[in-house]
Image (tube, rainbow, N blue to C red; front, top):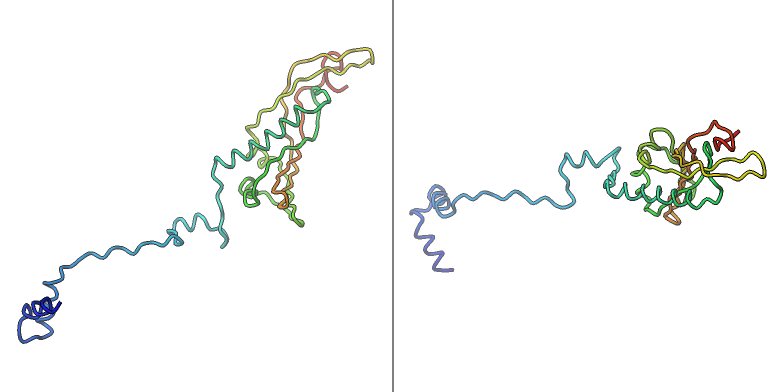
Length: 203
């Protein structure tokens, strides 16, 4: 270290002045580009912050795959309830059956954006109608086998084919106690307008 110091001292023009020291320093230390300061994991780019902040609170966007999987789970549960119904289906029938799934509380608002919810205790309740219902379950296809409605006691019911089932509305509840979302759907079977033993509908 002493030898390095003497070598540096010898390289500076004598007498040592501010000008001679600056000239030596510039020659001995070539200019290097400073690396840009690393961004900490907690700091997000301004554009990203604007996309993830709403009204001063963080908004969590649910991945499309997860949203699709949760909605399919509800629809699958509803289809199972429809299939398990012991009463025969007829054209024009209406019924209320439920579909459910397990999910975390943060997923509810992401599943149904823009839907007003009311919370009491551990239960949040909301309704699904019109565009909100269509946005969530518009692609769900359900059909059921339909039967005739005999008008006389001695007449036997016979199968009239199959009809599509429409989702009219839904009354939903989410419990933070069980992490379960349950939606009771109002259903309607297509068809109707005929007579019992001929058209298989209400009369």
